[in-house]
Image 1 (tube, rainbow, N blue to C red):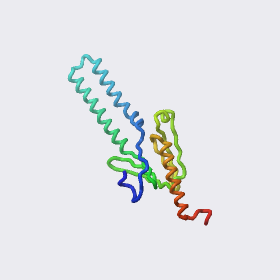
Image 2 (cartoon, rainbow, N blue to C red):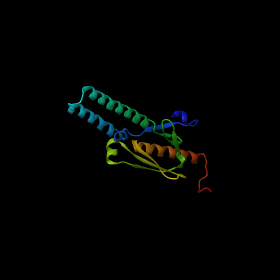
Image 3 (cartoon, rainbow, N blue to C red):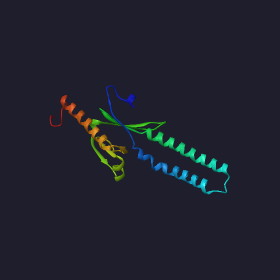
Image 4 (spheres, helix red, strand yellow):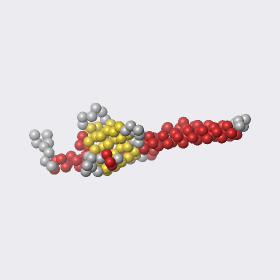
Length: 171
C-alpha cells in the first residue's frame, strides 16, 4: 500500500500470488457441485423441493468459499520499492516483513514445470542478518521480481559509493 511507504519512497512493483494457488482449494467445492448435479439428475425418488434446496445450499457454499479464497488471495501482497521489499498478509490482523534492499545478499528463483507453463515460481531472498531466507511462493513472473530487486539493490549500493561511504578496503 502506498500509504505505508516512507517519505520519498517510491513503489516500483506490487504483486500478489499467482491465480493458480486458488485451484487446489477449489477442488472440494467443485466436487460438491458435481455431486449435487449428479444427485439432481439420478435421484428420481427424491422430492423436487429437496433437490432444489440441496442444489441451492451447495451453490451457496461454493459462493462463500470463493469469496473467502479471493479475500485471502488479495490480502497477501509482495512489493518492491526503491528502498526495500515489503511482504504483507492478513485481512483482520495484518503482518508484514520488510527487507532493506541494501541488506539483500542473494535471490534464488525456482519454477516447476507447471510454474513455467503458467508463469509462476518461488523466490527465496537471503538478506544479511536474517535468521533465514524469506520464501515467496507462487509469485507471478518471478524473474521480473528478482531482476527488479537486483536492479534496485545495485542502484542503492552505487549511490552509497558515490556519496563517499567508506568501504572495507578503504579502512
